[in-house]
Image (cartoon, rainbow over all chains, first blue to last red; front, side, top):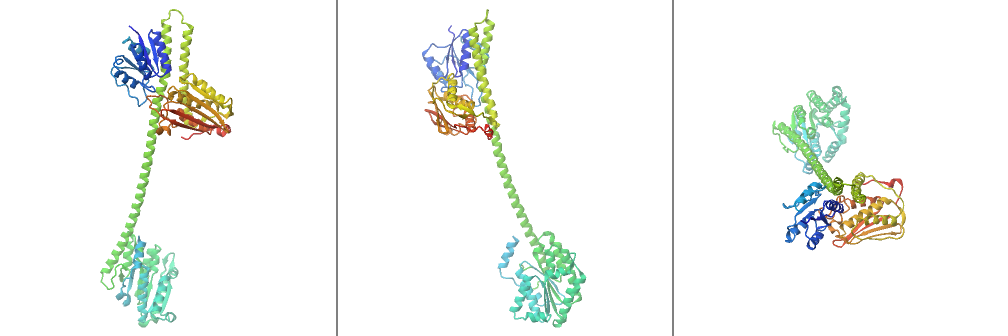
Length: 119
Length: 505
């Protein structure tokens, strides 16, 4: 079973930390900094087992990415875990029952548990 | 209002007077004429005395100056020889105030003096008048009422009544009805009426014939009407005062509502700030926590010692996040200091070009965009280097965040005694409707779900630049980018009163 993870987060620190720790755990990690870049990557590279998705991002944010992903038959099946620091008042949680939500700061055990359901 | 009514009635034709009573009063009549208008009472007096003199009666007039003048003119007009009558003792004319003053002791009429002066005069006149007939007109009682001394007026009336019982003469007293304008004046009014054998209502009841006892009732009603008018005036004034008070209250209410809205807005701003702050703190904390967790897991799993290079690399990343957290906390500290009006400046000699170059170099490490700097070798001047660096860093951080990865141009140049700093990006730009707000606290030109940040950078820049007596402005085209311009004095004032700056909050 392939253990490939795509991380979508505009925060370099978060990308860095997640890829370090997941790399240590033996996962094959690819990082992108936004929704648009993620879609480009998904359409041209091997399919990941799971996507870790941040919500607050410039250009294409997490909500927009998720909606584009669901509309694309070749991508809609890829499981998504939302990793978000969501907090500001105007943010609404992602309205999607198939998506698991993990809040920042991330509890690594919880995150690994969620990832291992898919790979 | 009373004034207005009096003026109105003064304009009208003088109403008829009680000819029957005033022309042919029987001896020992003690008449009271109430009046509203001075003109009218002058007419009454002229008639009363004029008819008397023409019948050969002697006359004593104790009146105020306007009425004396009017009487004498009337008599002259009627062809009467006033001077001869005065010389003969047929006509005696006295000033009411002067005569009254002579009669009073401690504000009360003195019986002996009254009998000597007034009594003496009446007696003397009776010896001259035809068949001993005398007519007396007096308004000293009216003066006492006007002075608010109605008790003395009633005492004086009693002295007059006593005099009519000793000497036979007809006496006409005149009272301004305005002296009884309060409801409480009705007692005095009734006493005045009782002190007279005949009561004539004011001219507003224009009846020139006797209508028996009802005249007393009519006079009483007139007094009541006058008192009611006063009461109406008083209530109208109260009503007006109440309306004023209501208007004041309405204004106060309005001010309170505005204040409460301001407070609610301040609370909303604070809540939003707390929410954004927790979000902003969460990102570096998250990275820090993950890095530490990875170190811990690696240590737990390690059978031998961890590779020093690997550990060093992880610790470097830990340190980066700690630095980031520290910067955020510095921002909170700065904001609270600026809000409290305690932005501290340290103005010193510096090279603007070097400071800007340094700030750009710093930002290069964090920037995915290409940073291009245009600066001369050196721009010596006087300013606060740390604050200047902060301004450049804030502008670059915005340009990087909103610059869509396109190259960012920074330029610094001296223009005579000014230094112009420009930061231009080719990013998303700012919509015209929000340009005016972007230097406000917690304002941002973009939705918060797209771009994090406090919305404080430009606000802080504006506070710093203005504290350094400079200006900050922006030009932007949506979709094509923004150019921020900072215009600073090349030599900022470093005197102590300028090194601390108080903001307005």
